[in-house]
Amino acid sequence: MRLMVTGGAGFIGSNFIKYILREHPDYSILNFDKLTYAGNLDNLSDIEDNPNYEFIQGDIADLKGVKEAVGSGVDAIVNFAAESHVDRSLDNPSVFIITNVLGTQVLLDAASEFNVQRFVQVSTDEVYGSLGSEGFFRETTPLDPNSPYSASKASADLLAISYYRSFKMPVVITRCSNNYGPYQFPEKLIPLFITNAMDDKPLPVYGDGKYIRDWIHVEDHCRAVDLVMHKGQPGEVYNVGGESERENLWITDFILDYFEKPQSLITHVKDRPGHDRRYAIDCSKIKNDLGYELKIDLETGLKETIDWYKNNRQWWEKIRSGEYLKYYEKHYLQREKI
Ligand code: NAD
Ligand code: TYD
Image 1 (cartoon, rainbow, N blue to C red):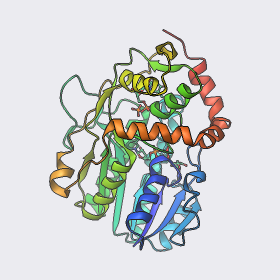
Image 2: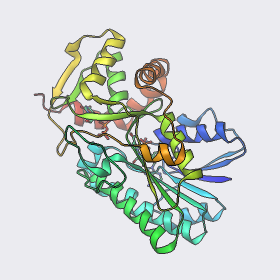
Image 3: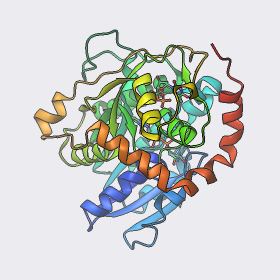
């Protein structure tokens, strides 16, 4: 089987490529990635010489480049490529529409032209919007996105489903909750707070910090995508969640306690506009229909992740000295305290 993985130099895509090469050593992988600020080939340095791995730098919104790659013969496409950070989407929505919406449509067209046997659209629970204190997102929950990021992902999901309904494209969609684990870019909550705590920098908690996310280890997500790629029913959506709902302040305290750092590092800053209060996933469909099981509990996974950032300082220091620094200064150092 030859897989085209788009966005394979990012956080989840790079973990997925390594997962597949480990679990299916006879598969070959074409990693197609634009290498934006979030794409980092260092994430793949340990497998770059694997004869079953190949990299092409390309943009999923560029039809010519995508056609060349898909036309080289691929059995399945797993689309991770996206602009993925809510805060950046509030600053500059247009690139989210170009990559997440137009890019997905270009990939779908190429997949259709070259008769690709499987198209996995990797989506997010954020397309469902926000929950109150009760209830769960089910696959039947109406799409109700609140940020330009989640609106662009919801649009891509609708396009993907339309290609199944109109052209019988064998599309499957996964909608996963918040991931954590090694190689996550340190602008997202968990890696930002781990690396800041290590260096005694403030942890910028948005608003009251009582926002709730359902955390899943990236390895559990990769296993779910692999399962859906092989066994999911075309045209179906599968929710994937970690069954580990926590307030942001719980995560913050866990990290501070781990390093024995003081609570005074917590800085409450101005809230994110349109901030979704709570996400929680009902993933009984993937469990019942495909036999999915979660393997990594949050406390164990978080400790391992913290240790990974402790042991791989050179990985994130290199990132922090680049383009990210400008973004960090604008968003965190100049963000109003409350
Ligand atoms: P990431 O930002 O770490 O990586 C995105 C990757 O896509 C990068 O390597 C980047 O270079 C590449 N890319 C961006 N624009 C591209 C383009 N136009 N063409 C080709 N490549 C491009 O993101 P991530 O956290 O690894 O998320 C991967 C996917 O999973 C995204 O689609 C995201 O919506 C989805 N997802 C993420 C989470 C999460 O918690 N991180 C949860 C659910 C779903
Ligand atoms: P994030 O990691 O950006 O993921 P998402 O917005 O996709 O859920 O944020 C997770 C939660 O943490 C969200 O409620 C926003 C909050 N947050 C902070 O309080 N401070 C921060 O510096 C960041 C990046 C996020």
